[in-house]
Picture 1 (cartoon, rainbow, N blue to C red):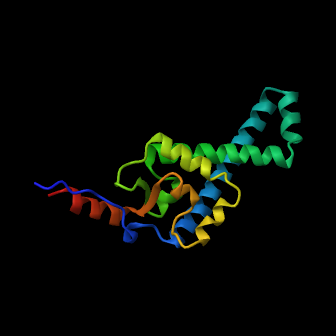
Picture 2 (picture 1 turned 90 degrees about the vertical axis):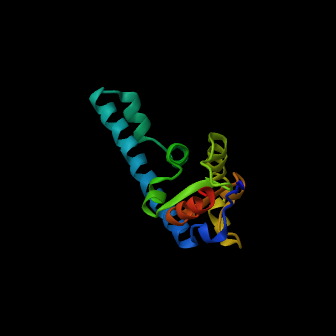
Picture 3 (picture 1 turned 180 degrees about the vertical axis):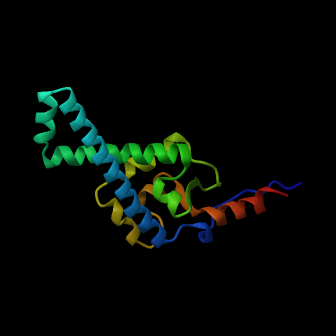
Length: 159
């Protein structure tokens, strides 16, 4: 019996349209989470009658808001892709994050993938010839179409 190895092929990769939709939908999810966290802190500050929290929230500058959004985005991508191999947007677009051999990425790959998203202008890395961005290539991960991936993996893995 021959042991066949799985390899990601170009036909399995998510399209640029799917990747762009993932970006837009994930940004919307991150924004909702960010607003929810801010509202929760504001409500807690009001209920606890905390002048310090009220002052802090009321005087947050653009840098603090940007940093808080980046922290939310980092946790969002890291946790969703680590535990589910997909963010909420990838769930909606029926795509997965996988390694070249078709396995689920380990925490180091997902951490590297998440941190690479904070490289300035990384979002424009999709405009090059490759279908993936820097956070894909640097972490050696791929975003694939769920149904084609599962079908191909069944064909190759099962005898």
